[in-house]
Amino acid sequence: MPVPTPTLWSPLTLGAIELKATASETIPRTWVPNDLMCEYYGQRATDGGLLISEATPVSLVASGMPGVPGMFTAEQLEGWKKVTATVHAKGGLMFCQLWHQGRNSHSRFSGQQPVSSSEVPITDAPHSWRDTPTEPFEVPHSLTVEQIQATQEDFVKAALMAREAGFDGYVLPAFRYLFDQFLHSNINQRTDAYGGDMKKRCRFTLETTAKVAAAIGKDRIGVRLAPFGYFNQARGEERVEQWTYLCSELAKLDVTYVHLVEPRFDEMVSENEKLEALGKEAIDPKAVSLAPFRAALGSTPVIAAGGYNATNCTEGIEKGEHDLVAFGRYFCSNGDLVERLRDGKPLLHYNRERFYGPFPDNEIGYTIHPEQLAAKA
Image (cartoon, rainbow, N blue to C red; front, top):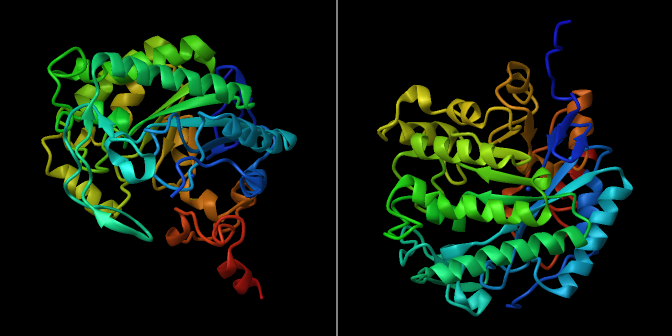
């Protein structure tokens, strides 16, 4: 009997959970989830659909942005319980994205010196945030082996707390931030067991994944990777070789899924500019795709993200290039994104200036979109 071709709406099992819809989801020292967040995630929850939370700091030193609730205090735990209950009430599923900013943070927000793989600061831009003065990024403290193990324990504790808060699974975002700072050779200058060659640079990610999986179950943990990411001077060598190795090792850990960011995507430049920049690296143009990593992952489900919209989100699934497509920016501006995709309605554009708060009027650009209301008037 022939196997039916998968589509955007095909059910999919990810470890211990069964998805029905495959469109998924992006100075006080600590912040707590509130009722507005319940409203936001509730607007986007669908029966059998998967939501992935905003980046959620695992400790105070992991925090580097105001207005971002973490997962390390009792008050935060109680706040997240309300969020997951709202999602579950609509039949939705929700994974918590456990986060550590590493050298991207700043002591004026966390009260602590940033940490990283090595004492290599960000130098291509200053640290700035809305009404705060612009300052250089600080030189991070290079984590000792004992501190690396303590940081891994922070992820384990946060995952256990997230389980208590009602999350259905947990995501390690091994891109952009602390994990990437271990993965990229231009940032990781270590010569011990956590640096020096590509396998050692992968050790922090693999060890942390294994420890979290041992605590909460390998059928409830995803890992997010951006093999071609440029964020905050990520310019490591051996991109294809190293991330192929990393994917093969994650497959051995039998994680729930791996979330891969398309090479075309970049936070600051256009798709054409990003691909042109990658073309200047010593990479075979045919390898500038997610294909090598999908092959290395074998039967591990793959979520693809980066540059997807209503017109291009189905082809890769139908071709077997990946199993799910994640939406971030368009999910911010379309609380009914799943229905719009299903019914063929256009997606409403997002307002990037309202992505990162906090604002005096946090609901604007979050749960209320004045430009959309004006267009309907």
